[in-house]
Amino acid sequence: MDSVIKAAVVYFALWAIIRISGRRTLGEMSAFDLVLFMIIGGSTQRAITGQDYSLTNALLLVATFIVIDIALSLVELKSPFMRRVFNGMPMILVENGTVMAARLRRARITEENILESARKLHGLERIDQIKFAILEATGVITIVPAVQAGRIEPAAAPASL
Amino acid sequence: MDEAVSRKYPVREDMRFQRRCWALERVGWAVLALIAIAGLTGAFGNGPVSRAHASAGPLTVSYERFQRATRTSAFIFDVTHQAGAEITLHLGAPFQRNFEVTSIQPAPLRSRTGPDGIDLTFGAEAGGKSRVVIWARARSFGLATMSAASDGGAPARLRVFVYP
Image (cartoon, rainbow over all chains, first blue to last red; front, side, top):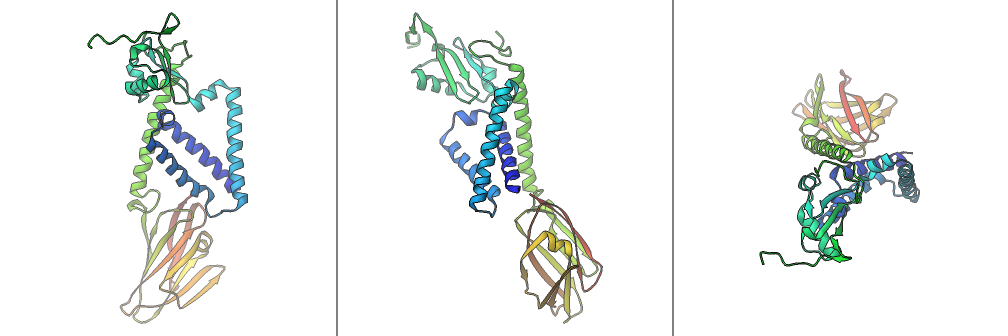
């Protein structure tokens, strides 16, 4: 009985902590973030299993986690509000080449993060080549390049060069 | 257009909801920080806030007010007595119910278990002051009120809160 309760408590506690920590942590995972997540996993794992290393307990825990996961996905499917609560919403960071500085600050994202995504996804070099940069609910930054006549704007060399 | 205004294209935004999320996030950070600070002070056991004493007559018990399930902690019994005598510690039934004794230092000469608890008899120190340390593991979470007495004297009350 306590295995199921423990699993549920850990599921929601971890969900709350990860949600509180902000989306930044999820999408743009650095090498150290990976280590951090492994430590979090290791610390909670012992608390859930305790001294019961039986196969029954392991299956019970896995079943509980998956059941909660499925139940929540069904709730999300039914209710757009709950979907927002669980996953957050997408937000525009760059609009027609203009950085929305206040939003970046609140979301703890730098212009560098956006440029990194722009380079990675589209080989863009400057903010003004970006039509939209969007922080998706999943935590990744997606880029819509500025398009002119069906192709990406010619990368004119900045005037200063 | 003002940054605070929700856009509809290319994604549908809800900045009011977003701002609420951010506010909750900040509250969450504060709560997490408080948890960490509380942990440092010993509010979850093993720290200055957690240290507790209970005494009755010749017996003083030092123990942890806050404990965690399955974690071992020390109950230190200091007894003053006549030189050379034997001392008997009585731990009430709730102690037996809530804790699993993992070690007793020094080893008791005799022990007896009954429905009213455990009696442990030790050889007393010559100086008139003896110390017994019992390491015990909390079995389940919740508030436990226990009693301990020496040589049939009035019982000292121990109140322990065990975190899950």
